Amino acid sequence: AIVSSTFLSMGTTLILGLLTIIFLFLITIFHYPLPGIHEQSITFPKLYLTGYFIAIIIGLVFLSYFGVRFAGESKRRADAVNKLQQVIAKEYELESLGGQAAAAAHSLGTPLATISVVASELKKEIGNDSDYSKDIDLLIGQTKRCGEILKQISKKQIIEDNFLSKTNIDNL
Image (cartoon, rainbow, N blue to C red; front, side, top):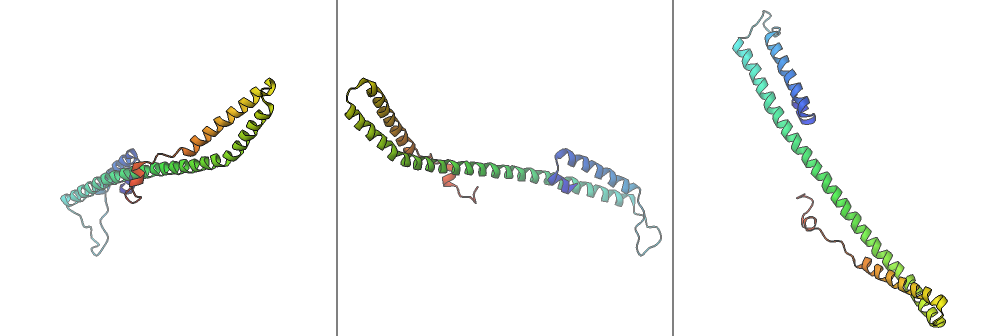
């Protein structure tokens, strides 16, 4: 019953504790004499048997109660550690994602600049030809827009969590 209080639910521990008390009561009333040096039947006084019965029940209740409390605290601590590990994993993932976004923005900057230069040169060569002028203006506008988006991505930084940055793993 005491070991079950640390691993099983409160209801199961109560049922097992009650069964233990019932069986202890039955053993206190219906028991055989102890074997040993004296082969004749040694009977213990009722007060002695009652004292043993009460002492074992008090020990059972006391240790089961603290087993339940310590198991509950241990479960809460394990849940807190699991949640903390999830937060740390998410922070790591976000940091990695931010680095990848900055690298992608840097890598895409050169081809985008090339497209912008070629579109500007085409606009100069074509002049005010109405068939292609609108398309080239759209192309130049979209390359500028993409450039601004890439600048925003590369400038975005992850907001640092003060709690996690000031706390070491031992304290957690």
